[in-house]
Length: 308
Image (cartoon, rainbow, N blue to C red):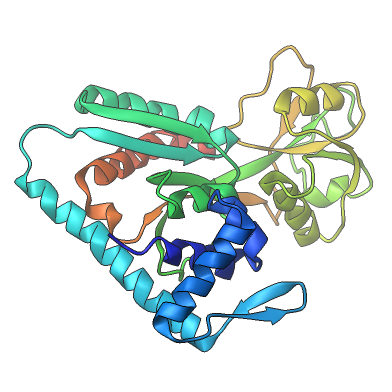
């Protein structure tokens, strides 16, 4: 119902280039460029201007997007109102998207609750990084995303999305069995400033999380090894090749001999986990049921989050 070209324009606004927006929207750059040219001709305004290797939106484009966000949110609310005219239990497909820890710890129990309460609802989960999750949400390829709040995701003020905090998760230090900090009760992140670190590859949310946390403690981590999987990272830590930060809810392979040490001395690094939906869709019964299930699961995790 809403002009699909607005989705392309929104992607350009977020990613800064037609090429990047085309990749997000699953089309060729020439097709995306053609759509923007056609839309500009129809409206009689200029939408994009060159800005070095990137493009910037004109004031007219920003005005168009603002109205487009309003129309899109209203359409989502319309779909919610129309559900009152349907008979029977919830049906259709509810699509979740989450980063690794949430995809393993939070979303599956929520799906299990939904399956028991609404057997006619088809449930899908896709694992993805936070920035990619929002792209899928904007494209209608996800209905609910569960992500870590990072600088790469849209701000809470973005009118295209409705965001809510699910929980704040402490980060613990992961060290080998012979590390000098083992047995200490007053561990501070700054105590590891001289250590070598194991971190995920640049561009991933966990990499950003680690570097920001260390900066907050007054140092830049000396990253010796890059590992995107907990199995690899824990193996390296167990053999003394470095230390790592690990989220409190992350389940590590038990075959690796490591020690998880809670950080008790401020600053205590945390990561905020949020759920996001398209603005206006939160009142749709299936989406509302999914958000309720996530909230209930996260409330049940309170003891694990507080454990030290």
